[in-house]
Length: 123
Image (tube, rainbow, N blue to C red; front, side, top):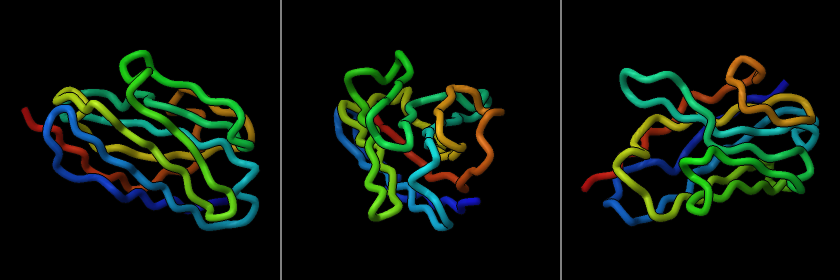
């Protein structure tokens, strides 16, 4: 089991950047794949990015490819989401989630979730 806490959200102007952090506690964190998801008001939670336990494999939603980068540092029990060229439509609460070994784009396949961090992108 792992516990996840997101941080790094805030208010940024369109075109700017933010780096989100997902800090994990618990044993065997390096064996968990981690995904980032986001949920805007009135919308379903959607997949953003995911990374394999080793960090060697990654996947991104089409809407963020080329702009966002997911990475992890297992020695620090931390997963990052670097968000560049932010757009107003990126505004959402961002969540990190974990599941054992292999990543998934499906919300229901993740076992552990953080509480979320708000990202607001202004025009």
